[in-house]
Amino acid sequence: MIPYKLLFVDPDNNALDAYRRLIKAMRPAWSSSFAATGRDAMSVMRKLKPDVLVTELNMTVENGVDLLKTVQKFYPDVIRIVLSSEPDAQAETILNATQSAHRFLVKPCKGESLIAHVEQAAELRKIIFSEELRKIIGGIPYLPSLPQLYHELLKAMESPLISVAEIGDIIARDMSMTTRVLHLVNSAFFGLPRQVSNPHEAAVMLGLNVLKSLILYVKLFFAAPDSKIPGFSLDDMWAHSSLTARLSRDIAKGLGGNSHIQEDAFLAGMLHDVGKLLLLEHPKYLKSVMLRQANDDDLSFVDAEYKEFSASHAEIGGYLLGLWGLPDLVVEAVACHHRPSQISGEASPVLAATHLANVMLCRQAGDEIDYDENLLNQGEIKMMLPDWNLLATRLYEERNTN
Image (cartoon, rainbow, N blue to C red; front, top):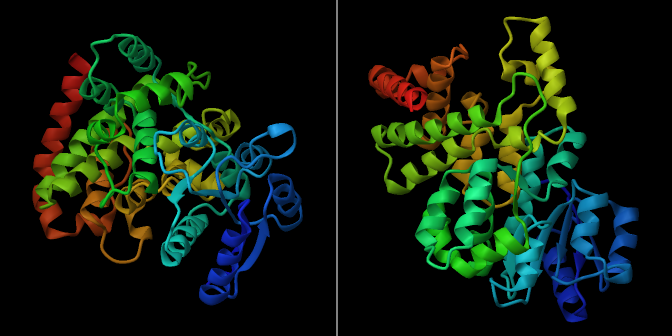
């Protein structure tokens, strides 16, 4: 068991005492520190450099500066968990914190649940070995949205007749908006009995007022600038992700997945390249990968990533989605969609569907990336592969004729 370093911040000394007892009883090997003010918390942060911050909302450092945002700015690789007594999931403080917190928990929170969230989030560090990459991911307050959809959404919000369902339709077409909406609706503040993978369902649960706050007030989404990286097209990436989502859902259905599995496969297909969005603000990453490709014509983009950084956009995207508490099957499928065999045991239908759909559609576009041999050797997949390839061809041709 890894001895994680934790920092608990809460103005209530009784709460801090409860955390002390919890860690001592359940995880005595962990190193824990405690602070009642944001200023004290930053002092501890500088000395300890914890793996995980667990804090109440509205904690500030000097001059009223928000603690979460300060930690995000100066210690972006620290995992940030809100454990709050705020009862209203639609409160302004909650919506504002979505820019800087990874997970949200509600008081009272069972000790077992808190420990599980800490361990689950911290374990994700195994996906990304590079501290530099973890800092990049942890410091991102929002993801770019496709400009046309962003402006369409803003225009729709101005209409007094717009419905939640119509807003959900727009959100479902965009990976970054889908990710943030699911991030919030799956937080503990909504107390849902299961994790939600469908952006339409999430939009209904949040309600129109919350969605307006997210989009117009908090500016959770923003229009991405055109990529200045040669050969990299945001429009192409979004189109590919949309097709992958549709094909993943059909493959998951063919593998016998129920409706929830199919929803997870659709979501994983939509988000499988979300790691590339995280890297748009860090063009050195993409440029170095493309340079390695230019020096070796036989390297695919993802193989060049592994050679250059020992990780790819797949693991980077999975790391972020895991921090945000999205469904485990989706996180696994996104993180491993290029290398399903890196996980132990048999691949889930969600992972298998996402990998197969991505490979088929990449090949339709002329990028001859490889299938995972272990998946291809499964009898059911081998038998159905020709039909799925025909479906991939049809989807790709439809997209290019519209």
